[in-house]
Image (tube, rainbow, N blue to C red; front, side, top):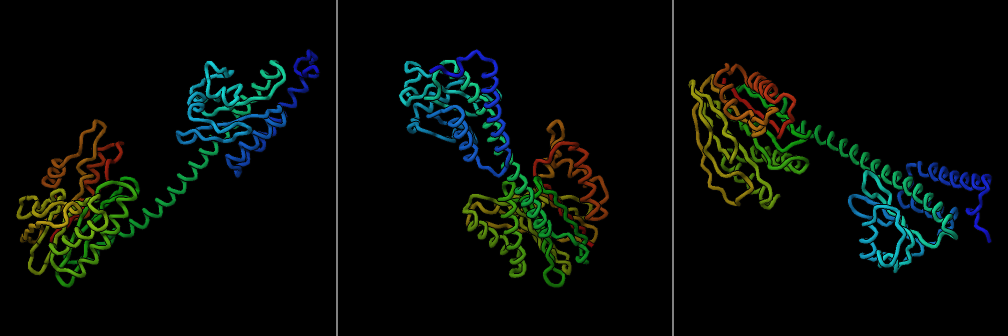
Length: 408
């Protein structure tokens, strides 16, 4: 019986090509439905090849997240690791011969056809038992390649759509987390009438691991705290929220900064089992006795301005979350009206400019010593403007937090 592809009749060949084009067009129309799963797309491809070309043995593999996935397999035994290795080494349409590809040949594969995208294979068809002549086989392989390209693009579009949806979901979750975290940080400082206090926070990626707090405990006593949780992102933000809640609870329970620090360390060790650490500075301000008592747990040295002199507040202990027991040293200082306390996290000093030069502690100290410390808010805002001028268009490398207290 004469094979239809052996004909030289132009009308017959045109009709065959039109049928093939219609089949591909039907595939395109079908796969444009975004609700179809990748497995359903592969099933459509199998049905088209089987009904249109009479392909009796086929398999299709596609790349997903740097791994090869079997999309369909029809009348082939399970592909062995050796056969997979042979297949994935192929970079062009290849007729399978036993001397070159013994594992594929043992499966009965006749042709392997890679689908190339950006010079790399994104999918593979293997087929066998599908044509009655060399002319028909060559024509069918062109069809298979075209279908493979359509299928590969459709799968990639599915993956991109899924990635887009995941990004949008994550963005919405981050927006909620950002709003929650923003509400956790104190923003109304007008209630502290015995002190001029102002805090400022900019998260590196919308949410962060820095926090500050100001808590009034009875008449004449106020606790101030600033902390930096190791790491970034959601994990650091969750830990920050937990520690902030515990700090507030402990301030209502204890009156001494050493007790609060020990309890925070115990809580942190229980939560993280030594896998996370926190730098923290806490001070108890007694406005009736004009006395400040503080502990610095591995944090950037706050700057205390008293009587025209600047000093570092460096007494304390190791950072929290490293050791179950802390050897704590605390210090008490006298203050008077006009004195100033400036606290910050390392994101302020580590901000770089376009030449990777850090803002640095020296610039922070020079700014504070060369400008009038008029109010807590004004100092924070002016220093942040200096920081932005230094950084220009450079992205922040970490969360940036400042907490200032002017003694009245």
